[in-house]
Structures are given as C-alpha cells and as structure tokens.
Length: 68
Image 1 (cartoon, rainbow, N blue to C red):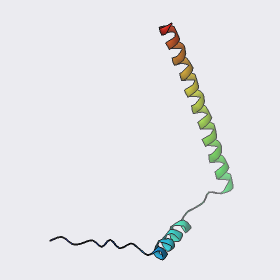
Image 2 (image 1 turned 90 degrees about the vertical axis):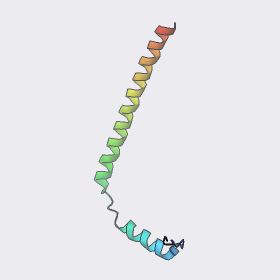
Image 3 (image 1 turned 180 degrees about the horizontal axis):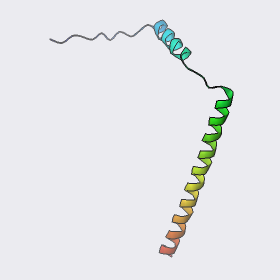
Image 4 (image 1 turned 60 degrees about the vertical axis):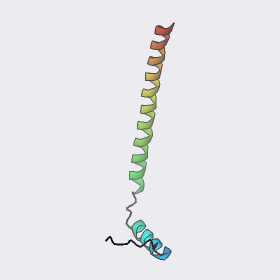
C-alpha cells in the first residue's frame, strides 16, 4: 500500500559538514555597516520607548480624569 519511511538519523559527521558549509555561506557585514545598523536600532528603540511612555502618560491622565 504505502511506502514505509525510514526513521534513520543522518550521521553526526554529515550534519557537522553541512553546518560548516552553511556557515561559510554567511556574508558578514563590515565594521562601518555594523556601526550604522546598530545606531539605527538603538535610536529607533529609544524613540519607540518614548512614544510608548507618552501614550501611557496620556492614558493615565485620561483615566484619572474619568475615575476621579
């Protein structure tokens, strides 16, 4: 009826070889690009944190007016 599937695992050596081959395909960014991208991530995170804090204060102020 149906084909049976073998549950044999790949040998560890083949896995390690494949892992090394994939690792060698990675293109690492140069130092300048890394600095620029890190700065963008830090600035955007800070801006998002400020926006969330301002929204939180507005909601808190509104609830204080409504409640009491």
